[in-house]
Amino acid sequence: MFKRPIAIGLSPNNQADDLKYVYKALFSPNCFKSGKFTGLLSSWFMDYLKSDNVFFFNSGRSALFCLLKSLSIGPGDEVIVQAFTCVAVPDPVIWVGARPVFTDIDASLNIKIESLEKAVNNKTKAIIVQHTFGIPANINKIKKIAQKYGIYVIEDCAHSLGAELDNRKIGALADAAFFSFGRDKVVSSVYGGAAVIYNNDKAKRILSRLHRSLPKPSLFWIFRQLLHPLAFSVILPFYNVHIGKVILFLLFKMKLLQKPVEKCELIAGKPDNFPAQMPDVLAGLLLSQLLKLTKFNKNRKKIAARYFARLKNSPDFGLPPEIKNAVYLRFNILTEDSADLLIYFKKRKILLGNWYKNIIDPKNVSFKTLGFNPDKFINARKFARLSLNLPTYPNMSVEDADLIVNLLNEYADKKHQR
Ligand SMILES: Cc1ncc(COP(=O)(O)O)c(C=O)c1O
Image 1 (tube, rainbow, N blue to C red):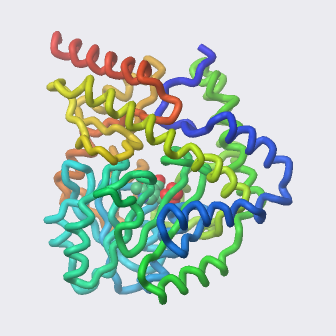
Image 2 (cartoon, rainbow, N blue to C red):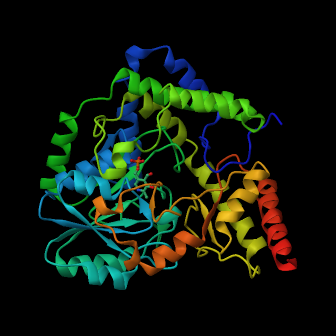
């Protein structure tokens, strides 16, 4: 009973050393905004990406917004974004005054090349390439198309820190890239993002100037993010005995915890606290997580390997592509019963994931505001309907994965007997 439930979300990355760090940091508000960690974080990323400029923000959205500005993208311009994504991707395109133009996806849940070719026109300035769930997109083909038309390629690495393609790091393959360190990303500082630009001195200079001009978030905003891992560490052991859920509800209600997407963003509004620089105390939390990046991703790959081994011959579940250097932030299976299965597992106190079941997540995003017509994207609609995300988080064991597979098979057996 008093054990963390198997749950794909609920702050899945926190480890004891992160909690210790946060607990100590909470009592030093004078170090919230500035300190030694930002420089250390920059060094880590510059070494990782072999770049001389990486900038840190208070979200992936802030990072993307500043990237687009630095590439001088604005009113009258179009930016290609795939369907089957989070509203946090097309929104910054609108925030800079440009228009998001959507494409369909292929079976890897990344941009479909044929759809991309059709979307390009003389207003297109950039393509945002999402490596969905940590599976690398076909960036080489995308770059060829972009080169032909003189369009920037921006990698969206929100799901894919640590993934590689042809022995090269995702995030270092195109003109620019951004990362997210949101609460259930590969590594997490609850809210956070990074942006990098390659081979474009003018854009690098603008990004650097823009970043310098940004404020740090307020002390209360920072306090809320620090409270997040601590609150979850206390609540999670009681999550399945209701009291945990009640406390969590109250903390959100009292606005002591912050939701991942604000209401105004559903209609492409920009929250006041974006864009801002990453506060130093969250840079410290991120560094603490980055020390464990290899270990985290090794576990994700181990859990994914287990799902592959156990589900490979199942006629009931479609599996993601098996790729050596993907990170499988979420192991997305395809099933006609995805909605039922979410409930089936919830009743058994296991929380699976529903990322992108709304095609553009979360629920209630205004497609009209985004200029998005779901009817045009057959694959995105199909995969959104069929998708069910299985967890692969850092502390998850092979036994947990086996339990999930056993329940999936049990469900399928019951269905066949009906
Ligand atoms: C694919 C993808 N890109 C970008 C983002 C934006 O990141 P952030 O939440 O840090 O703004 C998200 C966020 O959830 C995402 O799923």
